[in-house]
Image 1 (cartoon, one colour):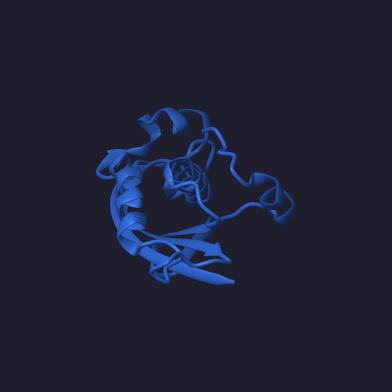
Image 2 (cartoon, rainbow, N blue to C red; image 1 turned 90 degrees about the vertical axis):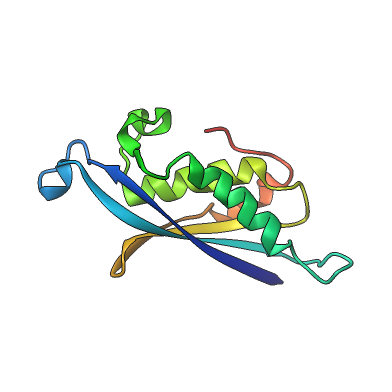
Amino acid sequence: MYEIMIEEEFSGAHRLRGYRGKCENLHGHNWKVAVFLRGEKLDRAGLLLDFHTLRERLDRVLQTLDHKNLNTLPFFRKHNPSSENLARYIFLSLERILPEKVVRLDRVTIWENQRQCATYYRKEEENAGVSGTRAAL
């Protein structure tokens, strides 16, 4: 089994609805995102997936978030823009635009600062049934 990972950053603001404390007020983060892919087979060039391809797809997703008030985006009108839900949003968005291959998106981790992060991944049972399907946002 092979695994590759890339990291990227973006800036965004949010406020947590239904939360008592400082985070209920609008505030911002310089978020760091790590994306992990797994697969059993490499292509002819010996790659699981070209890093450039993965980075281009991730950049497409992050453009929808960068320098935005996350609470105003459609997904986050329904889901509180917590780190956990942000990791899920990036996972589901990226999964929809990755090339159909033997590769699978394994997990997305997002840090809102250097000391805390959240990760989204599918349960193993769900991974078995995902091959070739794309989850809807």
